[in-house]
Amino acid sequence: MDLEYVPTHLEEWISSEYKKRNILCPEDLTIPNLSKRFDFLVRTHPRDSASGEWAGIHLIHLDNRIDPLKQKENFYHELCHVLRHVYTQDKMPQMFFELQEYEARNFVKYAAIPYHMLMYLKRGEHCLKHASELFGVPIEVCEARLNTIKARQAYKRSQLFRSLLPAMSKC
Image (cartoon, rainbow, N blue to C red; front, side, top):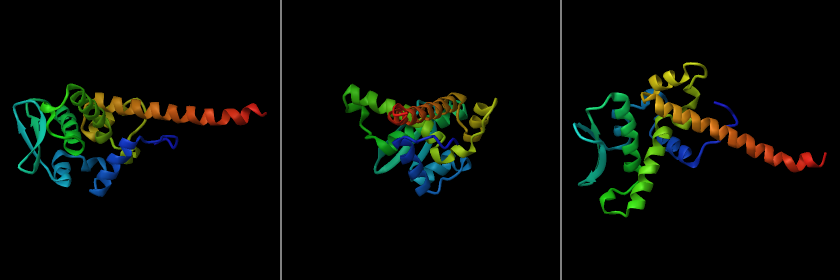
């Protein structure tokens, strides 16, 4: 991991929640382990993935018709709803529904490859394939995550450069 990288608040929150539950390395990021550590049930059915709370029990339903990598991506999406959202999406205004869906889609890449596990990533030609195999998510999720890392590094360099401009103008 590059020392210039500055995590977002969401990344810090996810890493904090994982560390509280002793989720420390990629091998800990299995669906059974995460559901146990966060205390909710996961069931698979031949229907679209969803999450909710029934009789005080948090439950994630995963579509068993899709491949395991995509299923894990859907799991992280639903995990966001369990951890950060209310469950009555069918009764909320459309804009709030869309906001929650946007946040859940964004959450996936950070939950799948959390900040405190970036050290496990390899650089080079096959880094996306390696990340996909290591974290058990589709290459598209890994690509999105690596793109956010690059963007945050560029942001940090830009901030550093702007902070130096006043000092440079005195030369």
